[in-house]
Length: 218
Image (tube, rainbow, N blue to C red; front, side, top):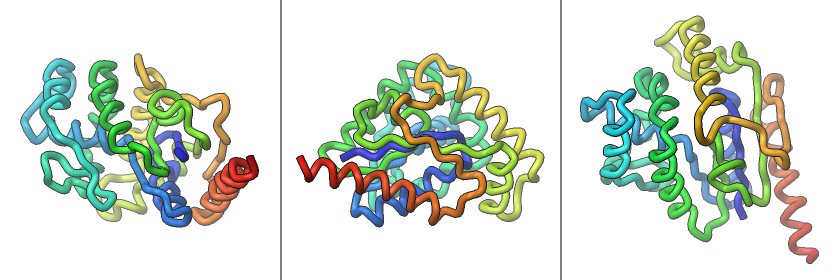
């Protein structure tokens, strides 16, 4: 079974997806981290994130794997490098190339294999796993998402800087040539603005278990 969650940055997708996966005994797979991994690799190699051909070359020559839930490139764990300022500012740009997205999509599907997974990103319900049995779209205001990100990061960027980055990221994500952020017609919409993580988890798990029970009944 595939449980897919989409939504803008900072709406709680990753946290909820991990908890739901743990509760259901499924494997957690973050598709957005694959694009961030390519972005990080490209930056570390001195590449220009606006140069599509060079980004594509990086994607073709970077082996991405998942070990114990953490993203690795060429065997090195970079999970703690995926949310730096440079990656935040460039991941959406790098992932806008349809050719690069095709490469990453193939890698994500290979990792998913025949496992029961909970996955999240920007286009998991619409492009990567359009046949997922359970689809969700999380949302929250840009202001609330910025507040959450600042609280998570502690010392660092100001609220105003984070809010600006989130708004620019949203604009980029919603206007991509391929894989634009949008709500799948059959997705369950959840506004997480004023819900606790536990409340969101309960909503998701309830839907998934009802689908599982329905399949068992057949």
